[in-house]
Amino acid sequence: EAPAKPAQKATAKAAEPAAAPAPQSAAKFAPAASAGEAKALKADWGSKVRARINRKVALPADTAPGTVKVRLEIAPTGALLAVGIAQSSGQAALDAAAIKAVKSAAPFARAPQGLTEPSYSFSLPITFKS
Image (tube, rainbow, N blue to C red; front, side, top):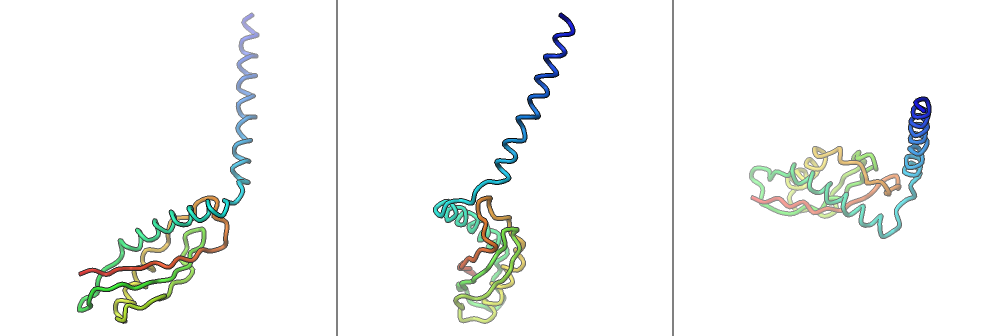
């Protein structure tokens, strides 16, 4: 009877690794999110991008407070691909500070799994307060 017990243990151990690859391969080939899910994922990711940028915002000296709307394009890796002014504050120094805040905040967090486009665009207001 003693030799039978080690054989049973070996069988149980062999079964565990065989079961493990199935969830990994399922996750590897997960389908893209539905349109509604993708919108929610992008919104969540965008709020993280905005929070990271807001930590870099600083009102330039001798500049009145204001808001600049920036347009940015981000790769799923989190790399900043492009940034520009979507709506100027009317103050060149404030617009430049907004671009600087975005560039200094990059790179951003990776896109959530399910977002499969080559890049994503965001339009974000950046508010400078005194």
